[in-house]
Length: 424
Image 1 (cartoon, helix red, strand yellow):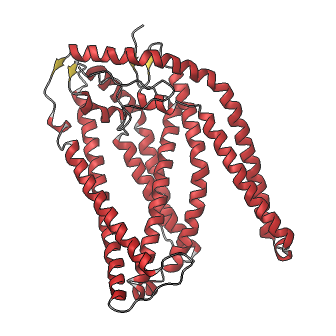
Image 2 (cartoon, rainbow, N blue to C red; image 1 turned 90 degrees about the horizontal axis):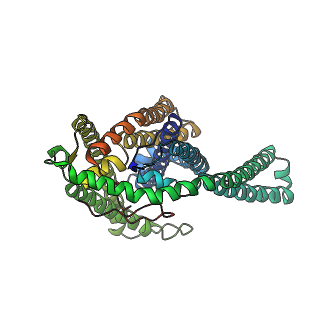
Image 3 (tube, rainbow, N blue to C red; image 1 turned 180 degrees about the vertical axis):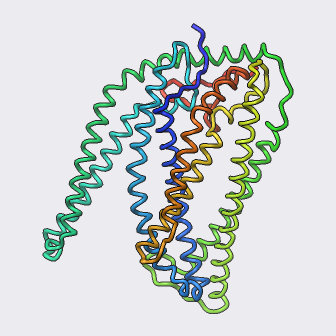
Protein backbone atom coordinates (compact mmCIF):
# COMPACT_ATOMS: atom_id res chain seq x y z
CA UNK A 1 0.00 0.00 0.00
CA UNK A 2 1.39 3.40 -1.03
CA UNK A 3 0.64 5.94 1.69
CA UNK A 4 0.38 9.59 0.66
CA UNK A 5 -1.01 12.82 2.02
CA UNK A 6 -4.42 13.58 0.55
CA UNK A 7 -6.60 16.64 1.05
CA UNK A 8 -10.03 15.65 2.34
CA UNK A 9 -13.25 17.45 1.53
CA UNK A 10 -17.01 17.22 1.14
CA UNK A 11 -19.84 19.70 0.51
CA UNK A 12 -21.13 19.32 4.07
CA UNK A 13 -17.73 19.86 5.63
CA UNK A 14 -17.11 22.89 3.40
CA UNK A 15 -20.23 24.60 4.74
CA UNK A 16 -19.62 23.82 8.40
CA UNK A 17 -15.94 24.77 8.11
CA UNK A 18 -16.98 28.14 6.71
CA UNK A 19 -19.55 28.52 9.51
CA UNK A 20 -16.89 27.73 12.14
CA UNK A 21 -14.51 30.28 10.61
CA UNK A 22 -17.31 32.85 10.63
CA UNK A 23 -17.82 32.17 14.35
CA UNK A 24 -14.12 32.76 14.97
CA UNK A 25 -14.37 36.11 13.20
CA UNK A 26 -17.50 37.01 15.18
CA UNK A 27 -15.74 36.26 18.47
CA UNK A 28 -12.74 38.39 17.51
CA UNK A 29 -14.98 41.25 16.39
CA UNK A 30 -16.98 41.08 19.61
CA UNK A 31 -13.82 41.35 21.69
CA UNK A 32 -12.55 44.27 19.59
CA UNK A 33 -15.90 46.02 20.01
CA UNK A 34 -15.63 45.60 23.80
CA UNK A 35 -12.11 47.04 23.85
CA UNK A 36 -13.13 49.87 21.54
CA UNK A 37 -16.06 50.84 23.75
CA UNK A 38 -13.88 50.67 26.85
CA UNK A 39 -11.08 52.81 25.45
CA UNK A 40 -13.34 55.32 23.69
CA UNK A 41 -15.53 55.70 26.77
CA UNK A 42 -12.65 56.34 29.15
CA UNK A 43 -10.79 58.67 26.79
CA UNK A 44 -13.98 60.58 26.00
CA UNK A 45 -14.95 60.96 29.64
CA UNK A 46 -11.48 61.83 30.92
CA UNK A 47 -9.84 63.88 28.17
CA UNK A 48 -12.68 64.97 25.88
CA UNK A 49 -15.48 65.42 28.38
CA UNK A 50 -17.10 68.46 26.72
CA UNK A 51 -17.16 66.88 23.26
CA UNK A 52 -18.15 63.52 24.74
CA UNK A 53 -21.18 64.98 26.53
CA UNK A 54 -22.14 67.07 23.52
CA UNK A 55 -22.26 64.01 21.25
CA UNK A 56 -24.17 62.09 23.96
CA UNK A 57 -22.23 58.89 23.31
CA UNK A 58 -22.40 57.56 26.85
CA UNK A 59 -25.93 56.02 26.52
CA UNK A 60 -24.93 54.32 23.26
CA UNK A 61 -21.74 52.89 24.77
CA UNK A 62 -23.59 51.64 27.84
CA UNK A 63 -26.29 50.00 25.69
CA UNK A 64 -23.60 48.51 23.43
CA UNK A 65 -22.05 46.83 26.48
CA UNK A 66 -25.42 45.16 27.08
CA UNK A 67 -25.45 43.95 23.48
CA UNK A 68 -21.90 42.71 23.98
CA UNK A 69 -22.99 40.56 26.94
CA UNK A 70 -25.82 39.03 24.90
CA UNK A 71 -23.52 38.40 21.92
CA UNK A 72 -20.86 36.88 24.17
CA UNK A 73 -23.40 34.47 25.70
CA UNK A 74 -24.77 33.44 22.29
CA UNK A 75 -21.31 32.92 20.79
CA UNK A 76 -20.03 31.23 23.94
CA UNK A 77 -22.60 28.46 23.70
CA UNK A 78 -23.32 28.51 19.96
CA UNK A 79 -19.77 28.37 18.61
CA UNK A 80 -18.86 25.02 20.26
CA UNK A 81 -21.96 23.45 18.68
CA UNK A 82 -20.93 24.76 15.25
CA UNK A 83 -17.50 23.21 15.79
CA UNK A 84 -19.15 19.93 16.77
CA UNK A 85 -21.06 19.88 13.47
CA UNK A 86 -17.87 20.83 11.59
CA UNK A 87 -15.83 18.03 13.13
CA UNK A 88 -18.57 15.46 12.57
CA UNK A 89 -18.59 16.45 8.89
CA UNK A 90 -14.77 16.33 8.85
CA UNK A 91 -14.82 12.84 10.36
CA UNK A 92 -17.16 11.62 7.63
CA UNK A 93 -15.01 13.22 4.94
CA UNK A 94 -11.87 11.54 6.30
CA UNK A 95 -13.57 8.15 6.49
CA UNK A 96 -14.39 8.40 2.77
CA UNK A 97 -10.71 8.79 1.80
CA UNK A 98 -9.27 5.82 -0.13
CA UNK A 99 -7.04 3.25 1.54
CA UNK A 100 -3.53 4.54 2.14
CA UNK A 101 -4.60 8.20 2.07
CA UNK A 102 -3.43 10.21 5.08
CA UNK A 103 -5.22 13.51 5.80
CA UNK A 104 -3.14 16.65 6.47
CA UNK A 105 -1.81 17.27 9.96
CA UNK A 106 -4.20 20.16 10.88
CA UNK A 107 -7.16 17.91 10.12
CA UNK A 108 -5.71 15.02 12.11
CA UNK A 109 -5.11 17.32 15.08
CA UNK A 110 -8.72 18.58 14.94
CA UNK A 111 -9.87 14.95 15.14
CA UNK A 112 -7.58 14.07 18.05
CA UNK A 113 -10.69 13.74 20.22
CA UNK A 114 -14.32 12.89 19.56
CA UNK A 115 -16.44 15.83 18.33
CA UNK A 116 -19.10 14.79 20.81
CA UNK A 117 -16.78 15.49 23.73
CA UNK A 118 -17.19 19.21 23.00
CA UNK A 119 -20.98 18.76 22.84
CA UNK A 120 -21.00 17.02 26.22
CA UNK A 121 -18.88 19.73 27.82
CA UNK A 122 -21.00 22.52 26.32
CA UNK A 123 -24.18 20.85 27.55
CA UNK A 124 -22.76 20.46 31.05
CA UNK A 125 -21.69 24.11 31.27
CA UNK A 126 -25.04 25.32 29.89
CA UNK A 127 -26.96 23.07 32.31
CA UNK A 128 -25.18 24.36 35.43
CA UNK A 129 -25.19 28.01 34.30
CA UNK A 130 -28.93 27.92 33.60
CA UNK A 131 -29.63 25.94 36.79
CA UNK A 132 -27.65 28.39 38.92
CA UNK A 133 -29.32 31.42 37.37
CA UNK A 134 -32.74 29.82 37.71
CA UNK A 135 -32.10 28.97 41.38
CA UNK A 136 -31.07 32.57 42.05
CA UNK A 137 -34.27 33.98 40.54
CA UNK A 138 -36.41 31.33 42.27
CA UNK A 139 -34.97 32.26 45.68
CA UNK A 140 -35.38 35.95 44.92
CA UNK A 141 -39.03 35.42 43.99
CA UNK A 142 -39.57 33.27 47.09
CA UNK A 143 -38.46 36.02 49.48
CA UNK A 144 -39.59 39.11 47.53
CA UNK A 145 -43.28 39.65 46.92
CA UNK A 146 -42.74 42.26 44.20
CA UNK A 147 -40.69 39.81 42.15
CA UNK A 148 -43.37 37.15 42.50
CA UNK A 149 -45.90 39.54 41.00
CA UNK A 150 -43.55 40.59 38.18
CA UNK A 151 -44.25 38.68 34.96
CA UNK A 152 -40.63 39.15 33.80
CA UNK A 153 -39.44 37.04 36.74
CA UNK A 154 -41.50 34.07 35.61
CA UNK A 155 -40.41 34.56 31.99
CA UNK A 156 -36.78 34.42 33.11
CA UNK A 157 -37.47 31.32 35.21
CA UNK A 158 -39.18 29.64 32.27
CA UNK A 159 -36.22 30.49 30.04
CA UNK A 160 -33.82 29.06 32.61
CA UNK A 161 -35.82 25.83 32.73
CA UNK A 162 -35.74 25.67 28.94
CA UNK A 163 -31.97 26.07 28.85
CA UNK A 164 -31.59 23.52 31.64
CA UNK A 165 -33.45 21.03 29.45
CA UNK A 166 -31.37 21.96 26.41
CA UNK A 167 -28.15 21.60 28.39
CA UNK A 168 -29.21 18.21 29.71
CA UNK A 169 -30.13 17.09 26.20
CA UNK A 170 -26.79 18.21 24.78
CA UNK A 171 -24.93 16.47 27.59
CA UNK A 172 -26.84 13.24 27.03
CA UNK A 173 -26.46 13.39 23.26
CA UNK A 174 -22.75 14.15 23.62
CA UNK A 175 -22.21 11.16 25.90
CA UNK A 176 -24.09 8.89 23.49
CA UNK A 177 -22.21 10.23 20.48
CA UNK A 178 -18.90 9.80 22.27
CA UNK A 179 -19.63 6.11 22.79
CA UNK A 180 -20.57 5.71 19.12
CA UNK A 181 -17.54 7.44 17.62
CA UNK A 182 -14.67 6.42 19.87
CA UNK A 183 -14.20 3.13 18.03
CA UNK A 184 -14.16 4.84 14.64
CA UNK A 185 -11.64 7.39 15.83
CA UNK A 186 -9.37 4.79 17.40
CA UNK A 187 -9.27 2.94 14.07
CA UNK A 188 -8.30 6.17 12.31
CA UNK A 189 -5.65 7.02 14.90
CA UNK A 190 -4.14 3.56 14.54
CA UNK A 191 -3.97 3.82 10.74
CA UNK A 192 -2.50 7.33 10.92
CA UNK A 193 0.16 6.27 13.39
CA UNK A 194 1.38 3.79 10.80
CA UNK A 195 0.63 5.82 7.69
CA UNK A 196 2.10 9.22 8.59
CA UNK A 197 5.77 8.10 8.77
CA UNK A 198 5.39 6.13 5.53
CA UNK A 199 3.73 9.02 3.69
CA UNK A 200 6.30 11.51 5.01
CA UNK A 201 9.17 9.26 3.94
CA UNK A 202 7.60 8.75 0.50
CA UNK A 203 7.36 12.52 0.02
CA UNK A 204 11.00 12.89 1.08
CA UNK A 205 12.09 10.28 -1.50
CA UNK A 206 10.07 11.92 -4.29
CA UNK A 207 11.37 15.35 -3.32
CA UNK A 208 14.98 14.11 -3.38
CA UNK A 209 14.44 12.57 -6.82
CA UNK A 210 12.82 15.69 -8.27
CA UNK A 211 14.72 18.37 -10.16
CA UNK A 212 15.81 21.23 -7.95
CA UNK A 213 14.66 24.63 -9.20
CA UNK A 214 15.31 28.18 -8.16
CA UNK A 215 12.82 29.51 -5.68
CA UNK A 216 10.54 32.06 -7.35
CA UNK A 217 11.06 35.54 -5.92
CA UNK A 218 7.33 36.03 -5.32
CA UNK A 219 7.52 33.15 -2.84
CA UNK A 220 10.24 34.68 -0.66
CA UNK A 221 9.83 38.47 -1.10
CA UNK A 222 9.02 39.99 1.29
CA UNK A 223 10.49 37.36 3.57
CA UNK A 224 8.97 35.96 6.73
CA UNK A 225 11.67 37.66 8.83
CA UNK A 226 10.73 41.10 7.50
CA UNK A 227 7.02 40.47 8.08
CA UNK A 228 7.72 39.21 11.61
CA UNK A 229 9.71 42.36 12.40
CA UNK A 230 6.80 44.56 11.36
CA UNK A 231 4.45 42.49 13.50
CA UNK A 232 6.87 42.72 16.44
CA UNK A 233 7.14 46.51 16.18
CA UNK A 234 3.36 46.91 16.02
CA UNK A 235 2.91 44.54 18.96
CA UNK A 236 5.43 46.41 21.14
CA UNK A 237 3.87 49.77 20.24
CA UNK A 238 0.37 48.49 21.03
CA UNK A 239 1.43 46.99 24.37
CA UNK A 240 3.19 50.23 25.34
CA UNK A 241 0.12 52.30 24.41
CA UNK A 242 -2.17 49.96 26.37
CA UNK A 243 0.14 50.11 29.39
CA UNK A 244 0.12 53.92 29.31
CA UNK A 245 -3.65 53.91 28.97
CA UNK A 246 -4.12 51.55 31.92
CA UNK A 247 -1.76 53.75 33.96
CA UNK A 248 -3.97 56.77 33.27
CA UNK A 249 -7.01 54.76 34.35
CA UNK A 250 -5.29 53.61 37.55
CA UNK A 251 -4.20 57.13 38.45
CA UNK A 252 -7.79 58.27 38.12
CA UNK A 253 -9.46 55.36 39.92
CA UNK A 254 -7.46 52.72 41.84
CA UNK A 255 -10.25 50.14 42.02
CA UNK A 256 -13.73 49.59 40.68
CA UNK A 257 -15.49 50.59 43.91
CA UNK A 258 -13.08 53.39 44.79
CA UNK A 259 -13.99 57.02 44.39
CA UNK A 260 -12.27 58.84 41.51
CA UNK A 261 -9.04 60.53 42.60
CA UNK A 262 -8.62 64.24 41.87
CA UNK A 263 -5.05 65.51 41.73
CA UNK A 264 -3.58 68.97 41.96
CA UNK A 265 -2.33 70.73 38.88
CA UNK A 266 -0.35 70.00 36.76
CA UNK A 267 -0.86 66.28 37.55
CA UNK A 268 -4.55 66.51 36.71
CA UNK A 269 -3.84 67.87 33.24
CA UNK A 270 -1.02 65.34 32.85
CA UNK A 271 -3.43 62.46 33.44
CA UNK A 272 -5.80 63.88 30.81
CA UNK A 273 -2.92 64.24 28.35
CA UNK A 274 -1.72 60.70 29.08
CA UNK A 275 -5.23 59.30 28.59
CA UNK A 276 -5.75 61.18 25.34
CA UNK A 277 -2.30 60.45 23.90
CA UNK A 278 -2.35 56.74 24.83
CA UNK A 279 -5.88 56.37 23.47
CA UNK A 280 -4.78 58.05 20.24
CA UNK A 281 -1.73 55.80 20.07
CA UNK A 282 -3.97 52.75 20.47
CA UNK A 283 -6.12 54.01 17.60
CA UNK A 284 -3.07 54.60 15.40
CA UNK A 285 -1.72 51.12 16.20
CA UNK A 286 -5.11 49.64 15.39
CA UNK A 287 -5.20 51.42 12.02
CA UNK A 288 -1.64 50.37 11.19
CA UNK A 289 -2.39 46.82 12.31
CA UNK A 290 -5.46 46.74 10.08
CA UNK A 291 -3.41 48.03 7.15
CA UNK A 292 -0.71 45.42 7.79
CA UNK A 293 -3.35 42.69 8.02
CA UNK A 294 -4.91 43.74 4.71
CA UNK A 295 -1.49 43.79 3.03
CA UNK A 296 -0.75 40.33 4.48
CA UNK A 297 -4.01 38.90 3.13
CA UNK A 298 -3.37 40.42 -0.31
CA UNK A 299 0.21 39.09 -0.34
CA UNK A 300 -0.90 35.60 0.65
CA UNK A 301 -3.73 35.62 -1.89
CA UNK A 302 -1.32 36.63 -4.64
CA UNK A 303 1.12 33.88 -3.67
CA UNK A 304 -1.65 31.29 -3.66
CA UNK A 305 -2.80 32.27 -7.15
CA UNK A 306 0.70 32.38 -8.62
CA UNK A 307 1.78 29.13 -6.93
CA UNK A 308 -1.32 27.35 -8.27
CA UNK A 309 -0.41 28.50 -11.78
CA UNK A 310 3.24 27.55 -11.30
CA UNK A 311 2.46 23.92 -10.43
CA UNK A 312 -0.42 23.52 -12.87
CA UNK A 313 1.80 21.76 -15.44
CA UNK A 314 2.23 18.83 -13.00
CA UNK A 315 6.02 18.56 -13.38
CA UNK A 316 7.74 17.41 -10.19
CA UNK A 317 10.24 19.88 -8.76
CA UNK A 318 12.07 20.51 -5.52
CA UNK A 319 12.04 23.62 -3.34
CA UNK A 320 12.51 24.12 0.38
CA UNK A 321 9.36 22.63 2.02
CA UNK A 322 9.42 25.34 4.69
CA UNK A 323 8.48 27.86 2.01
CA UNK A 324 5.46 25.78 1.01
CA UNK A 325 4.19 24.81 4.46
CA UNK A 326 2.23 28.04 5.15
CA UNK A 327 0.42 27.72 1.82
CA UNK A 328 -0.74 24.14 2.45
CA UNK A 329 -1.19 24.07 6.23
CA UNK A 330 -2.16 27.55 7.43
CA UNK A 331 -5.45 29.32 6.80
CA UNK A 332 -6.06 30.40 3.23
CA UNK A 333 -6.28 34.09 2.32
CA UNK A 334 -10.03 33.61 1.74
CA UNK A 335 -10.44 32.26 5.28
CA UNK A 336 -8.50 35.18 6.74
CA UNK A 337 -10.69 37.53 4.72
CA UNK A 338 -13.75 35.72 6.08
CA UNK A 339 -12.44 36.26 9.61
CA UNK A 340 -12.03 39.97 8.93
CA UNK A 341 -15.46 40.44 7.34
CA UNK A 342 -17.15 38.51 10.14
CA UNK A 343 -15.28 40.56 12.77
CA UNK A 344 -16.35 43.80 11.11
CA UNK A 345 -19.92 42.48 10.99
CA UNK A 346 -19.84 41.67 14.71
CA UNK A 347 -18.60 45.17 15.54
CA UNK A 348 -21.39 46.66 13.43
CA UNK A 349 -23.98 44.41 15.10
CA UNK A 350 -22.94 45.52 18.60
CA UNK A 351 -22.97 49.22 17.79
CA UNK A 352 -26.22 48.94 15.84
CA UNK A 353 -27.82 47.11 18.75
CA UNK A 354 -26.46 49.69 21.20
CA UNK A 355 -27.86 52.56 19.15
CA UNK A 356 -31.26 50.88 18.94
CA UNK A 357 -31.36 50.12 22.68
CA UNK A 358 -30.35 53.71 23.43
CA UNK A 359 -33.17 55.06 21.26
CA UNK A 360 -30.89 56.38 18.50
CA UNK A 361 -31.39 55.78 14.79
CA UNK A 362 -29.04 53.01 13.62
CA UNK A 363 -29.83 53.72 9.98
CA UNK A 364 -28.47 51.14 7.56
CA UNK A 365 -25.93 49.79 10.06
CA UNK A 366 -27.88 46.55 10.82
CA UNK A 367 -28.14 45.81 7.09
CA UNK A 368 -24.42 46.46 6.64
CA UNK A 369 -23.63 44.19 9.58
CA UNK A 370 -25.70 41.33 8.19
CA UNK A 371 -24.22 41.81 4.71
CA UNK A 372 -20.65 41.65 6.06
CA UNK A 373 -21.30 38.43 7.97
CA UNK A 374 -23.09 36.73 5.06
CA UNK A 375 -20.42 37.89 2.61
CA UNK A 376 -17.68 36.51 4.86
CA UNK A 377 -19.45 33.16 5.09
CA UNK A 378 -19.85 33.00 1.30
CA UNK A 379 -16.19 33.90 0.72
CA UNK A 380 -14.96 31.08 2.95
CA UNK A 381 -17.52 28.58 1.69
CA UNK A 382 -16.87 29.25 -2.00
CA UNK A 383 -13.10 28.77 -1.56
CA UNK A 384 -13.38 25.23 -0.14
CA UNK A 385 -13.32 23.36 -3.45
CA UNK A 386 -10.52 25.48 -4.88
CA UNK A 387 -8.51 25.07 -1.68
CA UNK A 388 -8.71 21.28 -1.89
CA UNK A 389 -7.73 21.13 -5.58
CA UNK A 390 -4.87 23.60 -5.37
CA UNK A 391 -3.36 22.17 -2.20
CA UNK A 392 -3.52 18.65 -3.58
CA UNK A 393 -1.76 19.77 -6.77
CA UNK A 394 0.94 21.45 -4.68
CA UNK A 395 1.42 18.22 -2.71
CA UNK A 396 1.61 16.14 -5.90
CA UNK A 397 4.21 18.43 -7.49
CA UNK A 398 6.35 19.75 -4.61
CA UNK A 399 6.04 16.93 -2.02
CA UNK A 400 6.10 19.11 1.14
CA UNK A 401 5.57 16.11 3.44
CA UNK A 402 3.62 16.38 6.69
CA UNK A 403 3.23 20.17 6.49
CA UNK A 404 2.52 21.71 9.88
CA UNK A 405 1.06 24.92 11.18
CA UNK A 406 3.38 27.35 12.93
CA UNK A 407 4.45 25.98 16.31
CA UNK A 408 2.98 22.54 15.64
CA UNK A 409 6.14 20.58 14.78
CA UNK A 410 6.51 18.92 18.17
CA UNK A 411 2.82 18.41 18.89
CA UNK A 412 1.88 14.92 20.00
CA UNK A 413 -1.84 14.28 20.05
CA UNK A 414 -3.04 10.70 20.66
CA UNK A 415 0.00 9.43 18.75
CA UNK A 416 -1.35 10.77 15.44
CA UNK A 417 1.07 13.68 14.94
CA UNK A 418 4.39 12.45 13.67
CA UNK A 419 7.57 14.48 14.09
CA UNK A 420 8.90 15.60 10.74
CA UNK A 421 11.65 13.49 9.26
CA UNK A 422 14.90 15.27 8.28
CA UNK A 423 14.45 17.31 5.14
CA UNK A 424 16.17 16.14 2.04
